Length: 376
Image (cartoon, rainbow, N blue to C red; front, side, top):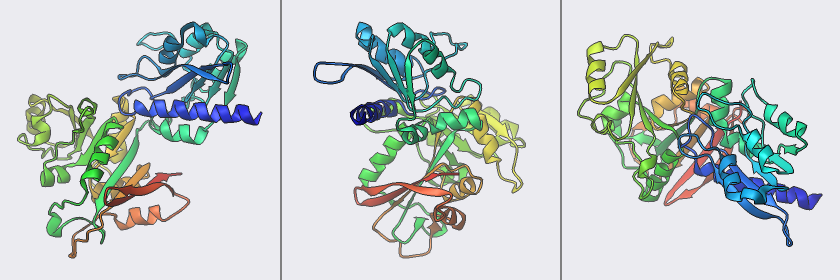
């Protein structure tokens, strides 16, 4: 029994690693990893594997079964999310049907589909067909991997990762908000990989006006994985000459404005290739962040990477919308008063073990990093 459990964990870990390859590329669908294994003379043998493809189809199970072919019969399917049991307007064969047709004897599923309308249905159909179903293997890891999908179908918003870089003495910007070159080249490359694992990058107009960023993925071979770029711009101040607007034909730019933003500015941005969407303002007079995220979820976005600066990070955290927080710290100090990277509200939340749990930490080049995951 212990040996069988060890195999289940090992193959599920492999499925999770496969699913991670598609993060940022499969929205509006989750990136599901799948592995098909059959008994061999010297132990279990992988005969097929795959993950959800760009655009959300084919699903991971379909890719694994296509690779396995007839060798799947009598084997075990390891999958990071309950196989889908319903047909959609996009058509296609539900994964439970593919699983039954493949003739596997056993399915090991990390977690049930979080959609309350169909949660557990796929597992029930498979059991009714006489297939053994085991659930809960590496469930915590799968919940984190699929957090964007889970939040989208249960709360109507994507997951948000907030990332900020700071100097050794805690500043994200220099006096008066001047830009600082904080991160090492290795940390910069790491951030590009983080961007590539999200569906959208989100930042506030203040950061755009100060830095004129491009916000694309510029690592060799990953350029095509640049996410949608989202600008929170209540008054539509995004300059037409900015790098974002000038590149909008190549990588999408979505601008979220307040309902009272000038129409003439919207017309100009749309003519330049951007999309403009509008939401109301919150009690503080700023853009309603939850409404903005809900709007992104309606467009299919499941994972948002926020590089919007300390102000946006504070607002997201206080609103309960920062699901993952990454803080990188340079060994170099500013040595003067500047823009504080982690504001008091976010700092207090990160220090509360009932709200945030340390997830990962380490070094990237000369910089250290800490990653926290929200647990409530």
